[in-house]
Structures are given as structure tokens and as C-alpha cells.
Amino acid sequence: MRPQYGRPTNVPDLPRASVTEPIHISNRTARRFILAKQGLWPGRRSSGLRGTRATMIACEHVQLDPLVIVARSHDLLLHARVNDYRPELFHRLVYEKREFFDWGGWLAVRPMIELPYWRVIMRRNRALPRMQAILEYHAATIDAMRAVLHERGTVSSRDFAAADTRAVVSYRGSKDTSLALYYLWRTGEAMTHHREGFERVYALTEAVAPAHLLVEAGEAETERFLLRKQIAFAGIGRLGPLRPLLHRPIARAEEAAFAKEMVEANELAPVEVEGWAGRFFVLASDVAALDTLDADRVPRAWMPLGATTEEEVLLLSPLDPVIERARAKGVFGFEYVWEIYKRADLVQYGRFTMPIVWEDRLAGRIDLKADRRAGVLVVNGIWLERGADRGSKRFRDALRAGVRHLMRFLELDRIDATAVTDPRLRRAL
Image 1: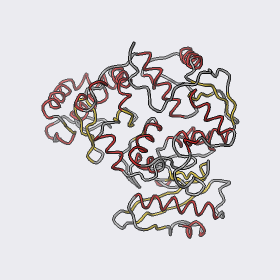
Image 2: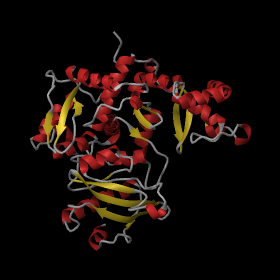
Image 3: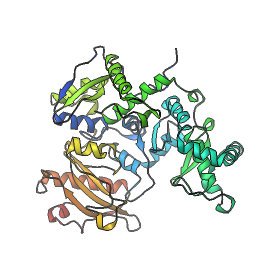
Image 4: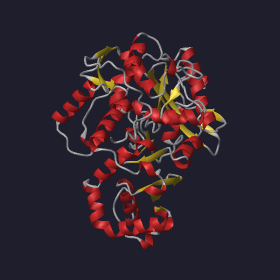
């Protein structure tokens, strides 16, 4: 029997009874469950290296992005979830202990134990038209980069001067060596050894990953794993469309068959949510938590270590999975667009607005910038949603606590809130 290489540590043993009829839950239960599954409600419940590891596993994917306006997106994500998070904890887990790896066109960090499943997808990536085009036009350079990795051990795109390479037009890099290294990384021959700034430094896969994980899981086993992971990532989600997830053509009938089989196998449970159209799914192992929340109680494992989200707001990265556009609107009634790339005349709020979690909802957004030279966290504006009472001392105290927690995390000395138009919110900071 093929071993279950990457059975995620965040998926416990399944309950015995299969749930085939939809579970009906309130919108409030759905909100709380989605926030809690992502480690945000009713407050931070992790700390230290162990807590950072558990949080990264629970998040399923931790997206990476090169921009630094306040901090790296993954650091902001973990700061919102881990009580005493520091960026060196992420670096240690990913690039020193090798417990996670980064990969993908949608760039994210995932548990290293899942690698046998992802190696199936890496192989399938070779058939993607853009990967085939790179191979067709840059085969000689790919061979050269493969030889360089064998010879040097680690290589980055910067190691090759523009004068010694062939210019290309691609958002993946302006040099053929960059595209060649990217091809080897996307198709599984190379992995990220470490990063310098945000620059990826490559090494051969066998120099990064443990030997026992340098295998491929079975095709069917991989697809079931990815489907479970998709639902776990969403908390409450749909199965489909599956083509971009599985990297192969798939018909609607096959998607429906997957759902039926996984419900009958007690891997998924169908859910209907008050105010939501259609049927959704949760992991069958999460049904007990849903029942607890629907009874207006909090599962013991989710109790916060310190302040609750009522006592201290959490400030979310613009790339936090909780505020993905469809989810933010459908679950929280919160319209959110990251405006970083908009023309100045089209910016409605601010270029780096961070959603504000207060209690069990998205209560507003705050536009921040870290001025590290001056040691100042600059607040460019605060906008609250309807129903968020700016006159509430409870909210103002929670806002102050959350912003000051972020200020300390960024190792800044003070807050400049002079641009905040509401005098009560300005004074609160």
C-alpha cells in the first residue's frame, strides 16, 4: 500500500458517522468558523516557534509577495495570528529547518511533508503551454543552469550579468537564465534554498528536501489531497472549478462525482449557510466545531492566549485569505480591493488598506505606512463599515491596542495619526 506521505497534520482522524445531509448553520457561525479556522478568532491562540509552525499548517497556504509598505505580507499574516511572532521564526522554519517550501505560479509556502503531492503537480506543470514555450526556446540555457546548480550548489538570477545573457520579455525575468531557473523550479528539479531580500536563491531539489519526500504520491491520492486542502483553506468552500487546482482538464460531471465520493467516504460534509446561495462543504472533521459554535460556545482548542478580538483588533494583510474578494463580500458583507496598483485618481481609500477584524466581523479598514527612517507608523486614514460605532469606547480601545501591537512588531517608536479625520479615532491612537 502506498504510504500517506503528506496526510496533513491539521486533518485529524475523521469521525465515524458520515454526514450526507446538509448541515444548516447561521451566518454568524459561518463567520466565526472561517475566522477561527484561519487562527484569527476569538483572538491569537499561538506563540513562539511551535505556534508559528501550527499556524502556518492551519493556514494551508501562506502567500508571499515582494512589496513592503508596512511589512511583508506573510509577516503581517502571521503577526495577526501568533501572539509574539517575529520574522526570524518564519525564516527558521522555512529556510533553516526545512519544514516548509515555497512554490507555484500563485506563490505560497506549504508544509514540506506535502511535497510528494506537489511533485505530481510540478510534473503536470511541464505540460502547461507557458512551460513548454520556455523549454522550446531556452532548452540550451535550461541545460546550462542545471549544470551550474550541480557545480555551484546554489544560484540566483543575480549571479548572471545581463551582458552575458539573452534578453527576454517576460514578467518572470528579463534574462534567459532567469526563465531557465524558473522553469527548473516550477517543474520540480530545483527548489528555493533561501532568499536574499526577496530574491530567490535556487538549489537542486535533492539538496533542499528530505530524501524520503523525493517521490510522487499516486495520481488519485494527490487529487483527493488537493480537494481536501482546498476546502480546509476556505474553511467553508465549494469543490470547483478544479482545472486550475488539479492542472488537468476536468468535466463538471467528474467534479460532482468527486463531491459525492468524498461525502460518502466521510472526508467532507455538506453545509448550507443562512443567506448563502447553494451548497458548500467543510471537512468532516470540522463538524463538531461547527456544532459547538452554533451552540454559541468556543471549542477549547480555539481559546485565545491573550486579548480577544473584542479587546484588541487584528489588522489583516491585503493578501490575507480571509479577505479574498468573493469571501469578504459574501461572508462579511465587506467590499475589498487592494488598491496598490490603481491609478492615483482611482484610489478610493488607500494603497495599503488593511482590513480591521473586531469581534467576529470586518469592521473597517486602515491605511498604514511604516516610516522606518523616522521610526513612525503613519496612519493615512481609517474608514469604518456601517454598524461599526466609532463612538464606542470599546472599539476605540481595541483599535488603539491593535495598532500599537503592530507598531511594536515593526519596532517603530510612535504613531502619526494626524491624517485621521475623525477626532475620536485620532485621539484614540
